[in-house]
Image (tube, rainbow, N blue to C red; front, side):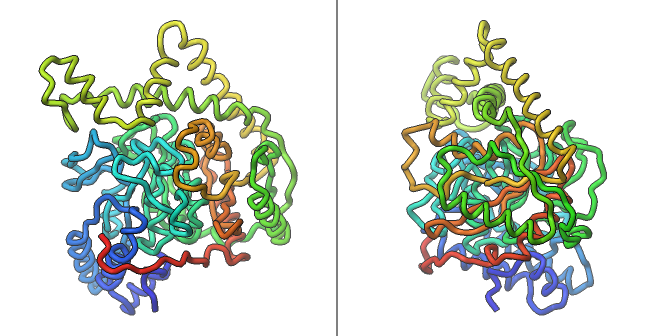
Length: 491
């Protein structure tokens, strides 16, 4: 039995039955990290001693009959979730030595559910990127092809799950940063409804768009993880008070009679033929399973990219103003004057993509341009949401590609920011409307994974998971594993 490929649900059942121990499972994951992460660079911090300590404690609790949702299960966290006493860098030089004094809601809820923390995963700096090449500490590589990107910004979490380093990981999604890397790495990634999961303890990028969610190897594991992290939080006024249902209960209800819409605008020019073919095959499978499919139009989709790249940088400009070299993080102490120190701190601490987005956002919010850019973008955002609202009057869920391409080569788009931004064209409208979406494997093109996106109405996670589970159970794609050479002692 290869412990590293057990699903969360399978591992939980075996732990409860006493067939395996949490310490065995955790050691297997840590050994896998030691063997392959030198090639991938999915982790920025590995908390091996803490993980083994937590695993032994979990084994004692299991032996005493405790049955917490994730008791003894190893997990990884994207390195923007604050963790007490553990370095949290946001993959930025400006936070390279930042050690939080408390856990955020996500780390706390996972700990309360009995999870074992393996470490913190690599990412695009401040979650700004679609390839994980913007990390100040080096890029992540795709487990399916080491010369390819894993997607971003949560590329480390996606790669860790795909490579067998962790059965479960958390990421964040501002414009596709869970779903796009899930697609490119051949795993399942869920972005919940805005407010379904607290943002307290996430280092902010764009506050009206950011949302945390899980990566796993199958849909059931994502449903289980969502039950743990979802719910209202007194520390986050944007978290929703609606009760959290049991997503597992309705997961296997099937999709016979469900109405699924296929938005024509998501089959964009430039979509790779192999991706389009895999999506069309997936649509046929859903129809064979009894769903009723029909085409639908979301006419304002074409404005989504431009709208997003005004709103998100504007919010980023405001959120990142706090990094001034005074309160915490890097400070250019060799500079004497206040302004000289402030400018040097931000100039040295932030990478090129973060600086680009701060400048875009500051410009969009500046006097004389606010109405022409930011205010207009917010009005278009309302129209994008209205398109979805109208579509969900007819349909239970919408089916689209997750990414118009498979994983591209490292360095291929770094000199062309617009081409890089287009990688998120199928995912970012979902964030603009605050809706839930999931990506799951639906085939391969040129030997690389293709992702299928399922979008639901607000708080429609149960329907999204149900459709995803039905498709997953009818196809083999989620069972495929990348072939990685094992290199002992590479970290």
